[in-house]
Length: 234
Ligand code: C5P
Image (cartoon, rainbow, N blue to C red; front, side, top):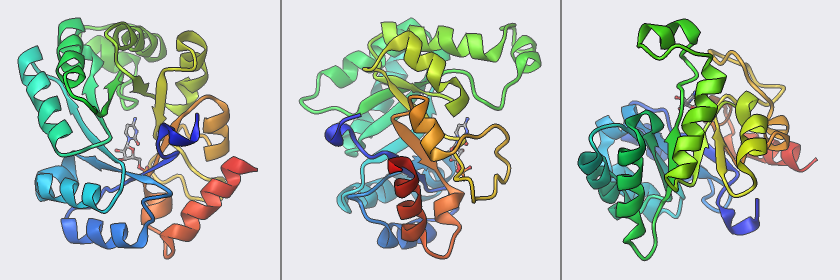
C-alpha cells in the first residue's frame, strides 16, 4: 500500500451517541487514522455526525452495508458520496446488477469514494448459510462473492484477516482488503474469536485494519494507536 492509499488504521466508532464519538474524534489525529461509522451510530447521530468527522479531516468509512434493489442502492451510494465519505460498502449478495449500479453511479463523479463489498459476514457458519439456502463453506463463498465484486469493478472487500492471504493471492495487489478482527497481542480479545495481530494482518495482505475497542476503550487512544503503528512498522 502506498502512502496516498488512505489510512492503515480505521477506528471503529461504535458509540451509542454522537457526544461520545465527537469526544474521541477530538482526541484522535486525522493524519494518522480514519474512522468507521456503522449502523448504530449512524442511526442515532445521522449524517450530521458523518459531516463533522469529514470536516475534521478524517477519512470516513461509512459502514452501512447497503443491500437492496439496484436503483435504491445506487441512490444510497450517491447520498453517501455527497456526505464526503472516503469509503462505503454494499453487500455482494445483492448480486451483479446491484453491484454494477452502485459502481456506475459513483463513477459519474469527478471524485468518488472507494466502494467495498461485504462478502459473507464472519458471524455466519456453514450451518447458517445452509439455513438461508446457500449451503457451502463460508471461506469458499467469501472468495466467490469477492470475485463477483471484483468483476463488477468494486475496489475491494471487507474480510476476516484469516481470509486476507487467500484473497490477496487470488485478486492481486490492486484489490483493497479491509479487515476487522484485529487485536494487538497485549489487548483483550473481547468477543472477537478468530483474530490476527495488526502486523500479522498486514503481512497477510490487509490494506486497512478496522480496530475498535483496543483504541476506543482505553485511557489513551493516541498512545494505543502509536503502539499499533509501531508494531506494524517493526
Ligand atoms: O472493537 P472491535 O475492534 O472488535 O471492533 C471491530 C469493528 O469491526 C466493529 O465495528 C464490528 O462491528 C466490525 N466488524 C467485525 N467483524 C466483522 C465485520 C465487522 O468486528 N466480520
